[in-house]
Amino acid sequence: MKKLLFCLLLCILQSCVSKQYLKKHGFSDDIKSIREEVYIVENNQKKLLQTKTIHFTKNGRVKTSKTIDSLGNLIEKTEKRLWFEKHSYPNKLPYYCKTRWKPKQRERISCYTQKQYKQNEIIVHYTQDDIIDKIVDNFSTFYTHQYQYTNGDLNKIVITDKDNNPVDTINIECITKDSRGNCLKQKKKSTSSDTIWVTSFTFTYK
Image 1: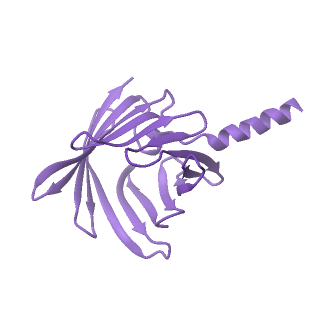
Image 2: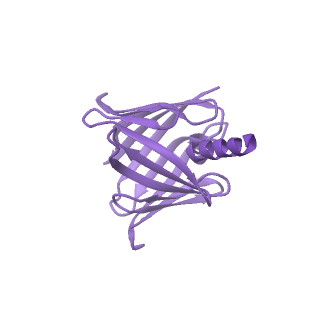
Image 3: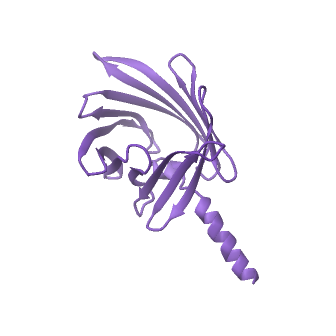
């Protein structure tokens, strides 16, 4: 009986444990925090869009994060709780997001308001190396984001609709890396709009 209860508890815990953020995004596991500055490039000039700071737990999952716009106004704040992640916003009710592990290297991430109204849901598929393979929107747009890699580096995200029609392709290039192999500057370009974004990363290591 005790063994049965232990196995049941283990299954419940595994169903709520998310993949490590650092690993699934291709970062090294010795990072304490990341600061991301996202710029849009227009007429060869960079304009800051937003800044995001992420602090991690010892096992590489997000402990807290905070995203602000170019004027310092809050866009989103997240906090890790025991069974869920709380997402807070300035002008709407907070979301409570639950992650459930599914068979075949998949996670279901569902977000609700406090009254249990579902706001969004995605299915994240992973490769055998535990990096993101594709993300399927299961609630609003029903778009699929297919991640493509070269030598372990993300170089393209292909976006299709629910009928597998192309929506956009985001070409991605890591311009510079640090000594640990983490990307310091990343460039993204949309083929549908020719929009270019540049993200600068600053890492704090353990």
